[in-house]
Image 1: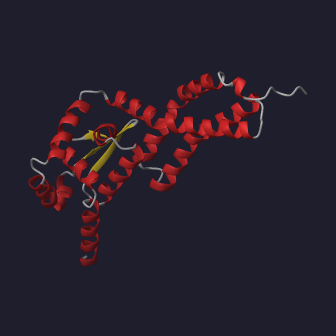
Image 2 (image 1 turned 135 degrees about the vertical axis):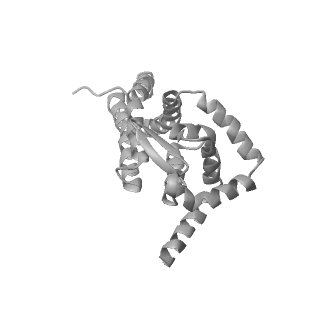
Image 3 (image 1 turned 180 degrees about the horizontal axis):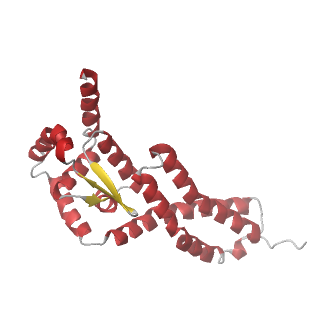
Length: 217
């Protein structure tokens, strides 16, 4: 029992050792929040925010639940709250009037006015399209270096860009486990692959002149 108390204390102190996790705790004072709302205020990548939330959850400082495709977090309730209530009270008193906390509260008000679905779609497009574009550009450049025709280089770049989405799901499962809200968010993110890839196809069709003509069989 004594050792478990020590481990629990260390998990809590670790969770409080990062400014982003403290900001999350201060935001949750207003009540339950969707992950996308937290991401909107912090301005960080979804995977980074999910990692912070996992650490807070392991420390018993937050509770989570799923509602369909959405993951929600809140401060502990009932008996769980009793264990961490002194810590949360100390944070509120120590950071009362802090500039960053006040700014986060204003930003959160704005985020709460936007439906979670709209926030989530906006964040996924912002975070995934640039990476897919980089993967596509890398394949393009390799095709040019190898003097490949457009009908070979273009599909190669598309395959590389598309695999990014599946890879993100595999990485999320290996890091956080199949039941983690992180995996749910990543799987839902794959739904934006189709419009992103169609946009990249449009770009690809404009680059035919950059490649040597296809050889006739």
